[in-house]
Length: 430
Ligand code: HSE
Image (cartoon, rainbow, N blue to C red; front, side, top):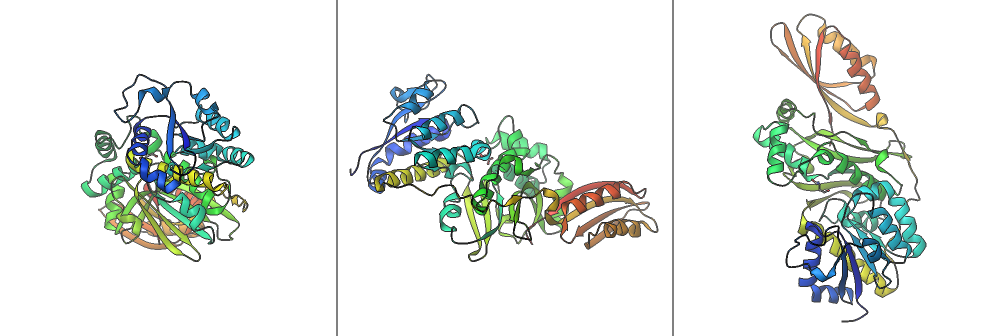
């Protein structure tokens, strides 16, 4: 149908890759009609050619020579679904420099070497698409890159890791501890046997770097992202959040600084009011809330992982590459002209919840309040629950800089009357 076939080489053929191959086959006619030319898979690079990949993957297309595959002059587009930095980086740079377009789902690679890949794509006049790298099936990068290109984004607030969202949902809804909820997520296949990248926030941080780069037209790398995971979230914190009408979520937050000349990018658990649209995003779902000057508030919601959802995003990119090629043009290039300064997390301003165990005697509240005042952090609410000689204090602050709050916590720990600063959590979404 129509033009010359779009010839595709696939690198990696696991859960997502085999689903891409299957969907390309079962939807071949529709996809050809949408592109204006058929999409043909001409080779699939894998580490182990002998592994069972199901009936959808033709064994004769498999090869363990990935370098040879990307060098083939008849390949128009390389789809990379292997993950990891090397050899993916070297293979994709070779493909781009040879004049092949690239579609990738590799968030870690983009968050660390995105600029290098974009420069190679520009230098050789080819496409680089990566919708599947952030929040799986959710159309999110194209809206940021294209639909919102005429607007000014001020903030992106996202739940971009399904594993941690599942764990926090279980902790909230069933009262499970972190370790029990993690074991449940592993049993259901949401969490890996080694869950470090998810629970320590690294996966979300890579996605935050990509989102911030697109939202603010600025190069942002993984090293620019302040990252805290959810391993320290206690069942008690979840109970307190609930009592306050809040829920704890792992958030990726990308925002402009108050002076508009900088940005701050951070990933950490935070309390969200249950009335916030992101608070209702349960289990392994992802959602991203975007605030912009003209459009106002937007939310993108859906499945952030899994074979079919991720394959949907990959196929959308492949159709875009095919259409661009037939039209003799390219999709949008990297837009990093704004080159905003990435500010340290200490400058980020938010509200805080603090749980303190204190002595219950005269002057304690005054000493605690004085510590906040001395660091210019204003208290919004304070609740005391006296238990004889000890008391629990729950304090919520007005917006304050991270560095000021850190000084408050250090000073509180130095007070005789404070037995423990039991919890400190940011409060977002207001
Ligand atoms: N492990 C990720 C998640 C999916 O749990 O959302 C891939 O980024």
